[in-house]
Image 1 (cartoon, one colour):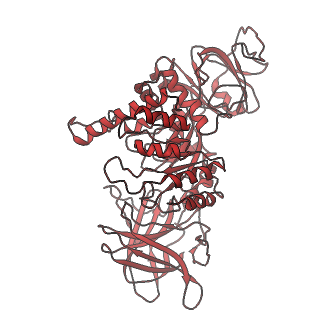
Image 2 (cartoon, rainbow, N blue to C red):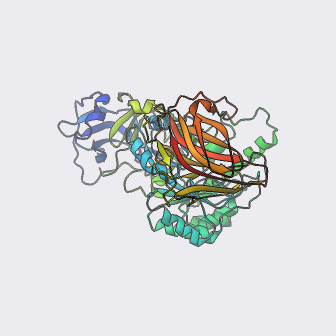
Image 3 (tube, rainbow, N blue to C red):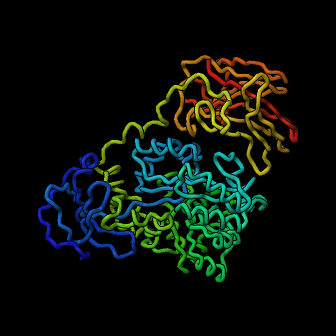
Length: 595
């Protein structure tokens, strides 16, 4: 019997329809009765009653008395576990599913109640947090992305999305600059080794990483690192990081290296699911294909290193890299637990990795991750015994988030917001940006983005506001094009903060702006369903361009023909251009508005 609980024999338990619980659980005690509870600590499962009031567990134990008036769920024959964590996901439109509401529903359906999203720019945190409150969704922790110039994660994004640092001073400044956004954690891209496909010339040095970790910890933000090579893993261990966000896969760890990592206290979320060479979408039809053989060998190293570190006492957590190729949201989290067992953990140990250990790495273990009085009521009922057969994690019966039944038997239908692909569109004033502000923000109070090309060799561009002849200010873009085909430099003005809420432009006929430059440029409208563009020519003197929306053509994406322009679902206005490799590009723009 758990301390402080009264032993009572329950007879004649009444089962109420579980679907009634979601609306009333805030002011009514809910009793989950008769389940075999795996509490997340690794203790032997036992039949218990768990009481929920509001978003908290108020009692848990084998002899808990069900209070009068409680709504009772007969969970006999089911397993009750803490909701699962996934410490490494990317909520990207290239993932499966692609839209935020459907991603959220996929995690809820799988019993994954807390995830880290490594994909978003800090400007988007506030609108995304507000959006998530309208959805059935897990708790989402947003990671601020920090890399080196040209490093992994910085090779496709500007510094509004991934901050670039290469000194301890820059690391401290980066953390200082994030204070206004309040990220939940830091993702440091410390490993420039691109899986053996490109040279390592962008890794973060140990002193910079240590300064970054110490500054983040002063704010209570855990630090997880993109690190996939053993030598870089040792740097991370000395760099005060909380956990690797991947497994180490270039070679097996030596016993001495295992000891170093174990002594550091650093954990690891190995993301075996994203590297699994045998899963659908990754398995090769040709087993002798060199790239496939290489992926099999690295996966073997990753499995070996997980077990070696676990046996040495290194905390092994659960992360998947879901949202990447052939790594769907929700189900990949469950598959990761299967792969932890394949690596040599027992099913019970894999479940602890996906609950308590992950909560500890995220500094959330006082709030969730185990089933105990006072903990958050994030729970999953399963028709099976996953501590014996890990594949039973797929047999989800019911899922509770914050004490509310959100998925499974008896759950209410998903709200309409979960069935949409994006937020309802809003309208905006005609004036997008007159570039009079000095803080990189537009007239619409959105943060301008630099939209140059990606890759290790990137076009170097600088955007800044400069005085305009006759008064006022304009935006100036100067660029030196990368030595490659298709080099591009540009800037975008989000129409809403973080480009999260789309805009309906059907009340306007086109786009008007002032421009000066030399040669041909691209003007784009970006949206949730695609992009549409037109070409304009600029001269050294200022001219005013009126571009009707009817002149825009859809942009093909990933080999697919672009969608027709409808005027709804727009997020950004972009202006930029391409030049030959190594050449210079310049333009100035002003008074961007719709007409």
